[in-house]
Image (cartoon, rainbow, N blue to C red; front, side, top):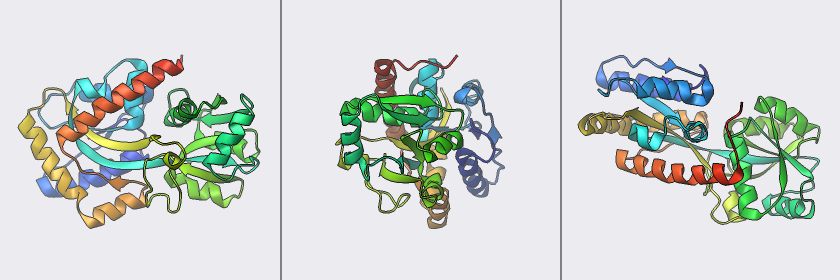
Length: 288
């Protein structure tokens, strides 16, 4: 099971838990192969070049789908066989405590009154944090200035000091930031409320149609026989419906989301069209 992220990252941890359960079910060891680097392209290439026999899978993410589109290589919707969803997650839009806005509606009102004067941080061009706010900008007409950072912790340091006004961070890391009292949560990015962020309202309650739901999904090399894909999907679905496994995922900031290969494939096509359009219209290009 290829993971295009570093050891200890959320995809890696989820892959190891899922792999352990599949090892039990199949009686055959699942090896997690971390291939970080090049914004996920190394892991994508590793899977793409593997034999289409069901023995190599890639636990891909929404961020990596966007990255493959940004670089024009290894498009998930065309160059892999979809096996199924594994889990979903959400992000949270957080504002510096120095910003006089207590919720999403107040922030949008403030941004409209101060065009080009508010700054938002991200983990880099084309990252989820970048596109999270770009989507908000496009749907509301607000004008915010993007400040890319090398990492989220660096961005949060400047948000604590009030130099950065807005950020979009993964839900699991939000409670620690909120305890500091230097940032406040405005809204979650998924379309509906979730136990991953109790009590937080979705952006969509203020901006209808807004949705940025992070996800993890399994893909196989293109050409993997449908019967093999189906067998893998059946085993994965059984694991994802296990209550203890679901609790384990929740503790990691993700919700189990079993699906059919067809449903996952349809979602990949929809997401590809959506983010390709946003990347092009926003003029976002690969970093050099």
